[in-house]
Amino acid sequence: MENYICNTIGPRIRGDGGWVEFVSYEDHCLTLIFRGECSKCAILNRCLDWICQEILRDLKEEVTINPICRKPFFWDQ
Image (cartoon, rainbow, N blue to C red; front, side):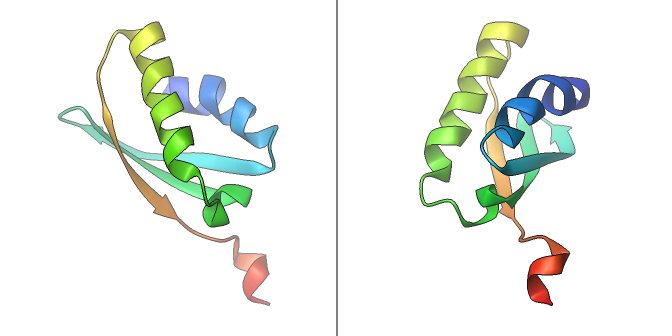
């Protein structure tokens, strides 16, 4: 799952100015950190649904996503 998030989903999200980091995958619950534009996105739920659909299509697994939104460290300065 980590490889799929980093190499398949990640590049697509970076195309929109955000990025996603894999944290964990346990009992069909995927925890991801969203940064960049994703950290302040008003429609993140649409992206979460899309990620779930992509995983179901490509990996044949149904997952729920626990999103953690964090702005990049340099935004605090």
